[in-house]
Amino acid sequence: MPVCLLPTPVAPSLVAAWVQLVKQFDHVTDITVVTGRPEDLPKIEKQLGSIPDFLGYPLEVKTDKNEHRGTAGTLRDTIIGRQNVNDLLLIEGTAIPPGNIDVIAEMSIDEEGIDGAIIQTPLSEPAGMIILKRKVLELIPEVGFFDLKEQLLPKVISDGNRVLVRQIDDQLRRITRVEDYLAHIARFPRTSKSRGDLDPWIHETAQVDPTAVITSSVLVGKGVQVGPRAIIDQAVLLEGCQIGADALITRSVVKPNKQIQAGTRLDEGEEKLPDARWGGRSNGYNAHAGRGSHLAGGSKA
Image (tube, rainbow, N blue to C red):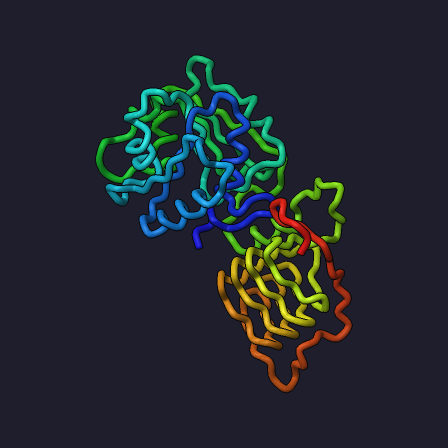
């Protein structure tokens, strides 16, 4: 599964969450999702096409037709023929939408001599968001590989223009490891008054046995089945997976449609089948079992 299709507590995927956020900006004329992996194109199109809120909005999904053009090269090929496009907001597929969009909405590169702005985390790491003026596309060669960060941005600066740096307050901004994704789920703000601080995120179509124990740092995806007495902590159960009775899953992301046998232990992605030393229960495990939780506006599970 591409990282941009990983589910979030408020949207079916990262890319869907970004589209919902970007639509709040009045000056956005269209949104294009671009992938350098042609095999991911139908998956992304299916994900976005299944969401009614996006219908009627200028939204396209493209791929790198020339292959190996790099981020900047693919950007040029996709945008260069569109006369209605001015400033560009580039968002990496691994980036997490910020809780506060003011840093983006208030950012201006209209000043003479400024061609772009990079958004960073408090740790001075890239947050996966860059704003560029349209004229920057002219610096990208028509053929060959051309990277955005390693080649285009240095080219902008060497030509005598400036690239601003703006810091965003959120601590976690990109998903590059499983740990990043799990931390994002655990830290996601509980803004709804109807939610408790200890409730997990459970999709309305998921079937969770009443005896299962699920902590607040868990996201249970669409169509997931969790069997009796299973214990789920610091984990994400992706669409369609089935968790057997007495299974223990911690610090892991379970792949879509994966079947976890009864009594299995899954810790940091390492699967251990039940044996004589593992009776299917963890002694002294007192996790909070959240009930009636919501995922992306779903009804009670």
